[in-house]
Image (tube, rainbow, N blue to C red; front, top):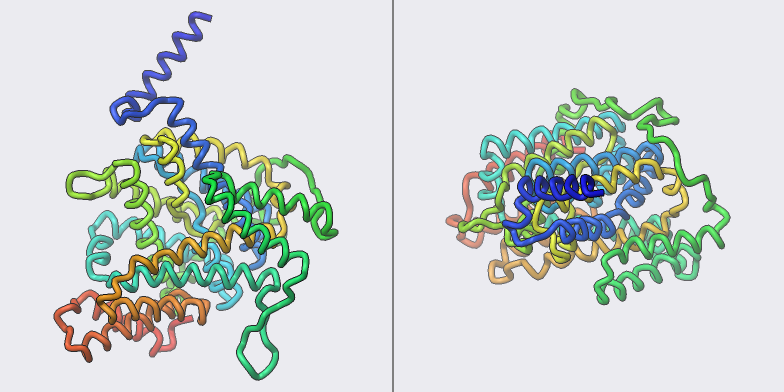
Length: 452
């Protein structure tokens, strides 16, 4: 017994030294609690992501395993190497873009999409290492950056409502969309679940998204004949029974074709802004910014983010990103990489529970999806309405992302409005060579017929 206590103390001392737990004013118990808190707030992703991608032809079981694997490996990398209390998982917004825009809307094959994810991650890594990422951020208008996030939020809302039949296509000659039936079981469950999330979030219940998904799934199991129980545990495999396997099937050559490159650029641009904004917010809450306001180990954090996306392309998952839900772990006291390590280990355990993903219908994942989309709309408050050209161009970008169901289309139109608007307003001094160059390249893709 005494030897066991000595070993535990030695382990605690080693963890303290490696993660600088005491130095950062934390404790082992506090870090473990923070890791469990972050895990509970983001575990919904391993159900939402497979549900979306299975609609696009991905095997649900294989995507469940791949999503758990990315969350585990990315979070462990962030914890052990970067030593920041931030968890990585498959990005909800980019998962939706991958499934509904690239595969279903644009008709890209799954191997090409996975190749695009890998190329995006590789470019992100190279841009971080060479300083191009910082150059790009310095030359991209803030309004377009914020508009991209707003537009993806609107896109998520459109996806969630259309999948449950709340919004349907209008076969008539009027507007393309119309309201569906409000009294159907999926619609009632979705709207009730969304309102429940609002209430639980107001009460600061950390696992509100998970609780709502579980509750609606249980109701579905009781009252919906399409929801059936298929077991508790299964041995994890990345094989896709429908297509012979997703692991290593990425088509990098296809992803580098001129017609696919705009989508790679859209993924890259969104990933850069998403990672930058999320990392800065979470690091600020954890007091992990240096004297210049820069994220401590920031370059390592961006590399961990981008390398995780490269791994996503290899194992057959959508792009990875640091989760804003990491902020809940920070609020619970997480200050070191041990928080992220705890998250990673818990996702490893989830690898064996893939049959449970079949218990969750689309109307159970719709409320969290809508909630995440609504939260992304908060970026409207960050727009600088004193600079109307920048702000309105960003809003144009947001609106056309939703109307076209294509991120790169919205960005292109937004850039065009910004550059032309600046010139007409006589504000050439607010333009820079980087902004003009990006706008010209984007419009060249469309004018040449290379955009998808």
